[in-house]
Image (cartoon, rainbow, N blue to C red; front, top):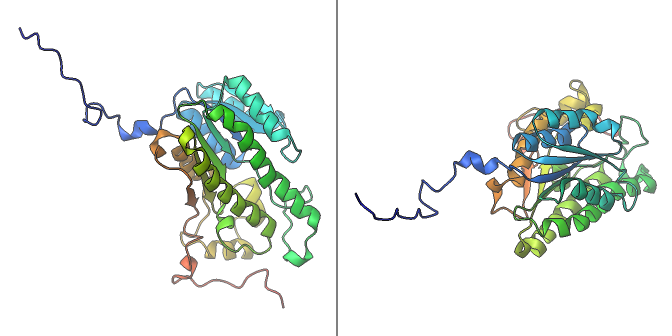
Amino acid sequence: MSTTAPRPIHPHTPAARPHPVDRYRVGGARALVTGASRGIGRAVALALADAGADLALAARTTAALESSVAAVEERGRKAFPVAGDLALPGTAAEVVELAAAALGGLDIVVHNAGILPGDGGPVPILAPFQDTRQEHWVQVVSVNLNATAELCRAAHPHLAVSDQASLVVMSSAAGLMGTPLLEAYAATKAAQVSLVRSLAVAWARQGIRVNALCPGWTRTDMTAFAGDTGPLFDWLMSHVPMGRQAEPEEAARAALFLASPASSYVTGHALVVDGGLSVPDGGLAGTPKPASPFAVG
């Protein structure tokens, strides 16, 4: 009988490498998802739970989070609701600290919360820039940009001590192209991409990956004003080469990629999930467009 000791497995031999699908697992990770009560945020939370994460879920009220919390727990993962209005200075930092306390730290942060300009109703304010009011600009900047900066700053010390730190900021394809009638929203989304790139460089040597996700038109409550049929919907979809909206789960799968070890060498990136909307002249490739419902005169 041979007494030769078994040869150590080189880390790059097939026997030592995990299956590629395993790289999408985040088992045991502690994740915060903001805007998690519905739409893309809820879908991201469920994708992370399916991949093995425990979660803190943030929204303006705990009541709004009941369904998302229950859905995470049904998947066998822990879920902690965290309430906070990100329009109020200081709230984003409080949300981070409450989440970290509930989970015992943070490994993944997906900042999804954001707003369109509006007066509290389901339909956003769509108006030429010169006809908008400064208060609506401030409203959007306070939530989409100021709260993002505050949340990232508060998350840093927690992510800096994690060995799987990933910060994902939900930007938008609107921030990558001209978006008339929604200038405040587009400007804040472009600023988020810029912030992500700067933080990715600044925090890379601390092991923190920072990326943005830029969805296009996605079927959520935020975009419900456009409907599923009619002149406005037809005009919007005519600019999407794939000719349809995304489902929230399609954006969530991209968020899981950025949050997981599957993207371990990806940082400072803006991953676009928009059906080709933001491709230069993409929507002009053999697709005649109807007249704009916003045309003047």
